[in-house]
Length: 110
Image (cartoon, rainbow, N blue to C red; front, side):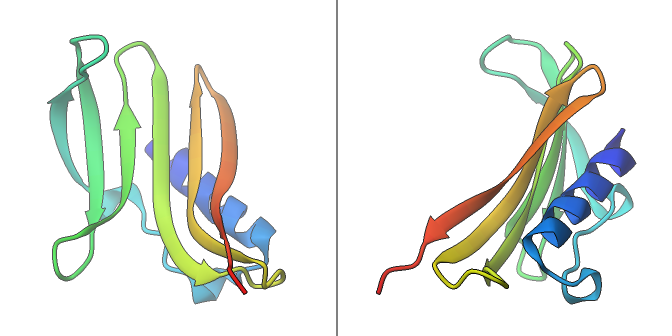
C-alpha cells in the first residue's frame, strides 16, 4: 500500500502540471518508519517520514490500525500553470483501498 500511495502522490503532482523528472517524490524505501501512538484512538500507527539533508520532514506515510491511511509530500513550488497559486504539498488519504487526493495550495499575494 505504501508504494501505491507514493505513486498516487506522483500522479497528483503530475496532474498539476509538474514534469515527473522535475520532482523527487520519494518511495517508501527511503522513509524512516516507527510506531507512534495515535492520540485520538490510543492505538499504535505506523509512521514513515521522509527527511531532507538537514533532518527536516518533507513528507510522511501514516497507517492506522483501523485500515485508514494518510500520506503527504512537500512540493514547495509555484504552480506550474497557474501563477495565482503556490503548491505547498500533495496529500492522499483513505481507507480500505479507497484513495482520495488533493494538493495543498496557498494563494499568491500580489
